[in-house]
Length: 71
Ligand SMILES: [Zn+2]
Image (spheres, helix red, strand yellow):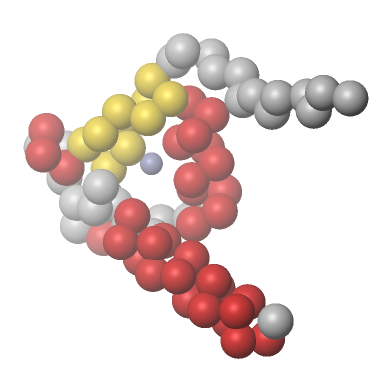
């Protein structure tokens, strides 16, 4: 039986995401803003709150290290 391919429907709408969050002093300058589609933008904040990409990556690496240590 063929495995159903997992897909993530995208609305095609884009949101502005602040690389350094506004509540942490980030501004609206173009170098602080990237465009993410609405679904990924919501998912990022659902999972990581106001973390930066670097902090989110560090968290994931720590979780991965813990998973490996505990089997
Ligand atoms: Zn955002």
